[in-house]
Image: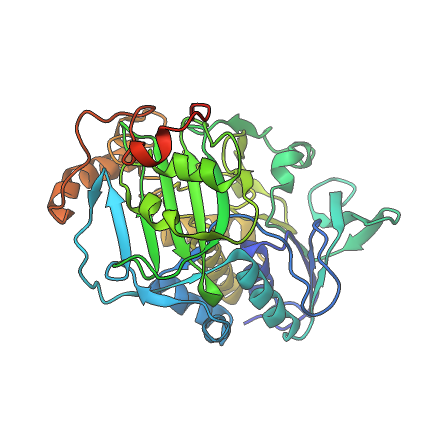
Length: 437
């Protein structure tokens, strides 16, 4: 273990950046986290973060406890629900419901705001860790020969630009994607723009349900299919709230964020369960459309040749293939794997050749295949030539295994197709509202 010395700067206060800061606190005397978003003042200040709740599977929960002991217990005390990943969730893949039997694996769902608040409070308890909000990083500081990074240039809110010296700069944000000149200025190849195989857009809204849908005490997930490229998730959060997330691979969202528009969209999914649950639901907040992965991402070549003093986490360096799983976001899982890989690298040899060793360690932790089964869409992704062959092979195997995993429930009518499919036409789609597409 390194002696605690020096100063480390982390760019970005998302899950990846906050977990990385907790790891760096064991090796550096001081760790500064820079976040460009503004957070309300006071100990109860929370950022407004859109999106569906994070689902922490058993492996992720155990890893979080190793990284920040007591964090999972804090989330549970705050009301985060816990349930069996299969027995307490209702899954529809390829239009078929998975067999609802207990898997013996407890998962935890937590809203983005609750997780952000818990991570920040936990880091504030660590000695030598500071979080500075409303601070935009505008560039890197380097030596005269540009062979080593020595800090960052920061523009605080309503202040002049400042310089912050550091022994290690960890980029855990999308800053490098927005400013590709950062890495090209260090003599590295120009980042290459990569467009995902599909354009994904989502809209979310919180609801109050009188009772949890049977067999879906934790979550209800309807995945898109080749005939119905729309997806829906109804996930339980703390304090009995539920978050509805509707998405489309075709980029078509409801014409309006009102409840009736969301209800009409939900009735076009590959299963009627979410629509049935929403009929008696009470909206708690206005819907917030969120573009998740419709824009360009940047693929950085040569990250193994980063100069000393700089480390770019996978959150900033977009991987190959789709960067978002439309069924279940894996942001926290990726952040946990990244933090564990970083901790092993620092414990073994400190910061010597950190970028090269970190890249190898992360590939070993993820099995060496970027993407894995993340982003799997039944009857769709197995045929996408943009994905690596190993990923397409996995997805093809999942396509073949789906019928055996089904519960034998009645499948959607074969005549129903995207743009015309509707389970409750007499209740919703008979209105004179504009068409969904």
